[in-house]
Amino acid sequence: MNIEQRSIRRKWGITLFPILVIAVSAFGLIYGSVPITLVDIWSVLTGSGESIHETIILQLRLPRVLIGLLVGACLGVSGAILQGVMKNPLADPGIIGVTAGGGVAATITMLVLPQFGYLLPITAFIGALVTAIFIYLLAWDRGASAFKIILAGVAINALLGAVQSGLMVIFSDRVQSVLPWLAGGLNGRSWYHLSFMAPYAIVGLLLSLLAIKPANLLLLGDDSAKLLGERVEWQRFLLIVLAALLAGTAVSVAGLIGFVGLVVPHIIRLIFGEDYRFLLPLSALGGAVLVVFADTLARTLFDPIELPVGILLACLGAPFFLYLLKKRGMMV
Figure 1 (cartoon, one colour):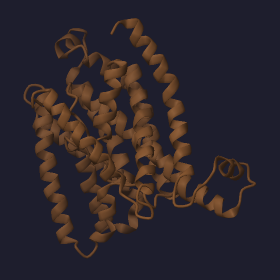
Figure 2: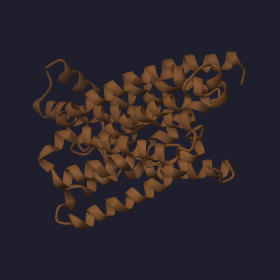
Figure 3: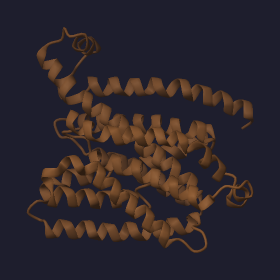
Figure 4: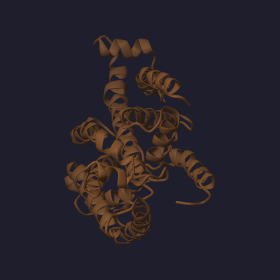
């Protein structure tokens, strides 16, 4: 693909993805156990809607859609950063253990300190950050190569999975409140949940704009970046911390939703190229579209039974992951 063709694609992407975000948001507001029309939505937003429609739209569906948009954006950007830092399309906050670290910390909070639910974003971020730092240090040997980070991450992911299972056994009398969260989903999410995760999500997404330059420099390769005077290991570390913040924020509200950070950035990179000036914002928009669309399907496909969106996304992401493994000759 030549430069002109890629430039045209990027212009189309910048134009179409915001439209897709609006479209799936409307889709999420309209469809559910009680059908709502666009006219009903407009009436509610202008203050002339029926009370039942106001309750459904403003108290149930709108906060859920907004949370889905932020969760998807966080996971998409987190995955894009990790794939660039590790130079590997298989890198994902879920696969290398960052999400699991946030999940274990959040699980401990919910089981041991359920009255402090508002601390979930902080504890999940701390868990994800500690895990990311530990993985980085574990992989360090006169520099932390992308390959060693992924191997360390996979090992830590397995260990944290065992810790998660142990917590389920120890606190078996309280586990029912945590199981839906572990499956990953937005059921029951409200303005309360949005209020305590939005600040962290917005700060993380804004900080990701500052990550564009160092992420692009890392694309040149470690040796080339060092020749330009860049502190490669330090920049890689800061980018991993940012990815941990975004992943931990998403985990704190939506639970263990996987594969968004794998599928979305990989597809965006294939279509629009590796330039992070376009990759990060389009990954944010693409992740938002995927999560909201999948969540709407999860609550309408088998109505009145609602599937956790994490299960639906796993059904999409697992085959995609296997495809990438096969394409790369089973090499990580």
